[in-house]
Amino acid sequence: MTTEKLDVASVATKANVYFDGKCVSHGITLADGTKKSVGVILPATLTFNTGAAEIMECVAGACEYKLAGTDAWKKSSAGEKFSVPANSSFEIRVAEPYHYICHFG
Image 1 (cartoon, rainbow, N blue to C red):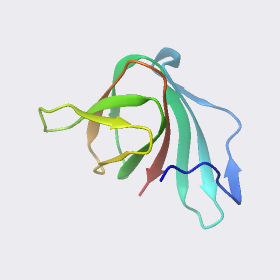
Image 2: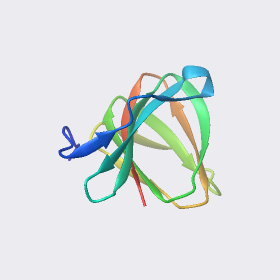
Image 3: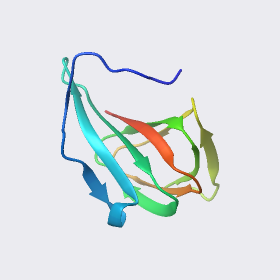
Image 4: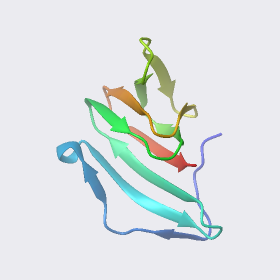
């Protein structure tokens, strides 16, 4: 189930802009200290490195992703999620704007 609303949260008003504007996100901290980011990735193929484990939740659009150490590209569409281990990386291919929530930890 895709999250549509986050209650009781602090939102960083300044955007994080990566890859020459191909990825733009805002950090969110919930009342219990949980950290997330919400954003959009524009058409591109990008590589992200992780510190903490991440769950990428697709809100709109679609992507293909490949986790570090694997050869297979997998698809993720609206309402779907994929997990990325801590201290790892993943490649993501986007043909249309991909709107996401990234859940950390």
